[in-house]
Image (cartoon, each protein chain N blue to C red):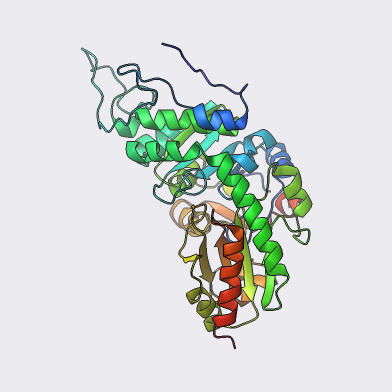
Length: 250
Length: 146
């Protein structure tokens, strides 16, 4: 923190390493130094975590993810006190032009009705899949805030009231091509970016990713980010089991 | 016509279902319609309107009906006093950064974020506007405090 620090920005859980940051503790640091705290809440959704209640000045959501939930509309939101949100409305919407289309707003509004029901299933299935992955000898590491072994599991438990979300990261004991081969053998989990959709999605972040230097050691051999969807968790586990039998390992 | 007036006294599931919805005043339909119009009718004398206002109904980029309904629901779900809905998550991120940062300001950002937040704060804002940045391991509050 410096005298000219105006803003602290965090994501929790974070993309793509599901790092957990303590919103209440960081908001105290921000406010003691006259700075604002913005928290990207996309991985949690308001069902699991509400940063405004924990002291964040600005909460950011990609509505494209859990809040719409169906993978068919894009949107975003910023939430907080009116005096801050009015400034964003005037500058970022009216003058930068980032307005949402009425049709997308309507789709997201319809999707958001079932947010709590979907989040319950995302939370439950991701916990099951993460626990399963931990038992496999082919798996190099699993990162999920709901696991006791996660570095900040206790902080996650304190600030995520209903669960830990549907996103996890893991790596295999294999090389670059082995990771890609594994994805090519999946039948249920789809090889695509984004998260929070009804269907499960997986993306390989290779060992040449430009931000490798910022991640923990376990992420540096290449890893997957997986968004656990609303399929039956047993089918997702079978999909992973079958791909591990068929993929081309080193 | 009855008004639902769903507020923070209702629990999360109820807010998720009813928040931002009311009976449509014109048709009586129990769901608010999609309003795709770009423009809203001006008053008899529009000459003293603030064309940059986000308050009134002028033009959908200055605020549309469906955007307003969605904002009502999201504010209820977050227990937050206000909300602005934008075209994408990155529009919200860049909107927050553009609105609250100016040349000479310093930002402390987590070293694990969405790639667009990294691109904006690590490269574009420093290069274009002279904003300073420090990336920290935000899982440790002490590294944020330093």
